[in-house]
Length: 250
Ligand code: PGA
Figure 1 (cartoon, helix red, strand yellow):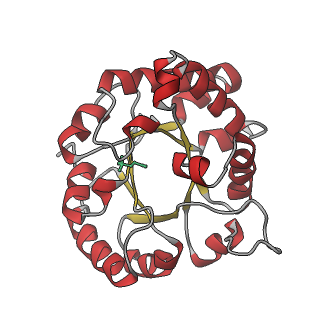
Figure 2: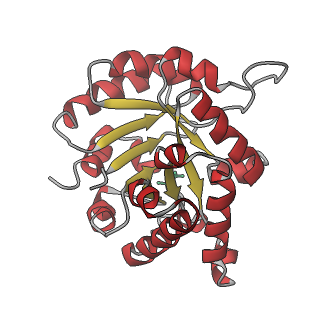
């Protein structure tokens, strides 16, 4: 049985004092869950959230990293730096990074490899645009993104990769894919992994759904056969609302 993994993506939100307050509140609300809880905070909040999350079941992730270890890359943060302060997860290739910061399947692949080199668990985002969906090429897009993202990884590394299927048209729009639709896309991703890395690997990989996940729709989404939890943006900013998503099965 795969575990349910619920990750919050704060994006460019929360000052350190707000972040500390959030973790304090959330840790109480999710202390009994069997599900994995991750908060992906902005760089400036990472240290504070890590300190506040000590001794709780909340894990901390970053939202991006550079693929080089160090060097003349003004404004960038490396996997080694994240690892050094105790970060355990990192989102790679979020559609907002692909769209606004020119990330490509190639840089995504390099970043995933650099994450593993630094013992960070990558949460890799794939998903189609509305245009691609309307053209009927969703399956091709998500298969290609998955294949290129994981290219050159070992079977063990693939098993330890979290994939977030995030249809771009559903992010921050209030439009959620139906649970059936999301589950089907995730099955396509799992099948692609099976074709390349084998059934045992595909059966172990955590594949989340992301895109307007709320406490109201979490249960329906997460109880399908292949959706292993969610990557949650807007609804992760409020501790109470996010805790209801984490505790969807209570
Ligand atoms: P949303 O964002 O939940 O606000 O739609 C999800 C994401 O971008 O990861």
